[in-house]
Amino acid sequence: MSQSLPSRYQAQLDTKAEQLRQRLAPFTPPALEIHPSLPEHYRMRAEFRVWHEGDALYYIMFDQATRDKYRVDSLPAANQLINQLMPAVLEFIQFRPLLRKKLFQVDFLTSTTGEAVVSLLYHRQLEASWEEAADELRAALNQFAKVSIIGRARKQKVVLGSEAVMEQLEVNGRLYKFEQVENSFTQPNAGINQAMLTWASDVTKGLSNDLLELYCGNGNFSLPLATNFRRVLATEISKTSVRSAELNIALNQIDNVQVVRLAAEEVTQAIQGERVFRRLEGIDLSDYQCDTVLVDPPRAGLDADTLQMVSRYPHIVYISCNPQTLAENLETLTHTHHITRAALFDQFPFTEHTEVGVFLSAKS
Ligand SMILES: C[S@@+](CC[C@H](N)C(=O)[O-])C[C@H]1O[C@@H](n2cnc3c(N)ncnc32)[C@H](O)[C@@H]1O
Image 1 (cartoon, helix red, strand yellow):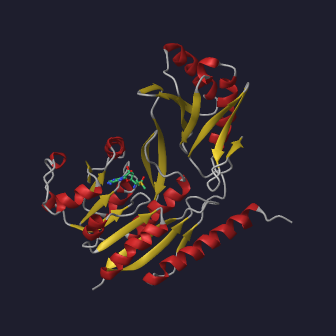
Image 2 (cartoon, helix red, strand yellow):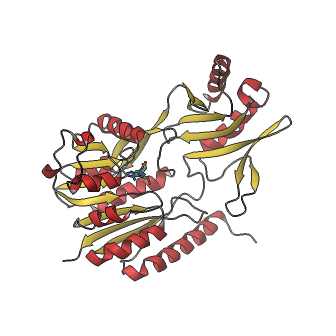
Image 3 (cartoon, helix red, strand yellow):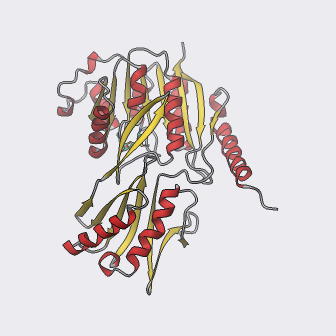
């Protein structure tokens, strides 16, 4: 008899937890805290290639191992809204050449508040008649949610509605509003994101002075953590995300977070006084007393200079989407720090991906 979904879910989580325990074992962490996800319908965004075959039109994805394409009519990992929008988009487009011609990809970005941005990507330029047809599609999809449509082609972007969804996440009983912009980084699993924010808030409770944050995205961690610190200096490389973080600070009426567009490598240069940045005009770095640093880097982890810089802070919160590069960085960080908390966040159930949070304190 085949296993039920809850027991298959638990089995995959147990495997991930065991693999992570083994990977972290050389660094003698405390007991691993485990944050399970919903077993399905947890993804707030999804991207599909579109396959044209005669009159037929369907979504495809690619097998990670073989790169073979396979047809996708629904995606259990994606939330209900995406699963409603998926067939509705294709049915509408199938016999409308204006919308269908040279369409090669459809992206869905949704929020728990019932908003969606559907992006249609084309290998052709989009004319005014495309816009009229896309408006009709938007009206048809509005029965499911507040839907915006974006048409993308080479050097062209047409926005019908908004480029973003407005997400709401609850951390320690407070609701935070986050603008999440199409085509820029946002955490895909809203429930797990909420768990990560609550965990980061918990591990930094009782710390004093200021927080330095690298890779802050749209201010996802910056805003909920602002209550634990006197001030937060949050940095990020992407212009879109920095603009979004600034908007999110205003939306949530938070007055102790400053966002600056700086790559992690540039933060190191600025802090060490090696380079002066116009983007830091009006900000006196020596005014900040950052005893804590939070990093949430891409899969590559921290570069050598950032790693050295981070290791000089008494407290480090490290959020990682790649246990392998986390372990490589921990080989350096555990010379000066020990791990006082470690958590597995099952951001991507039934995949080989594991999200990890580690809190380190300087050895006395
Ligand atoms: C894993 S995401 C985390 C974003 C954010 N902390 C969140 O929770 O949504 C990594 C972020 O790092 C940014 N990034 C990538 N390379 C960077 C670099 N060299 N310096 C600074 N930020 C970078 C990306 O734009 C992205 O927003």
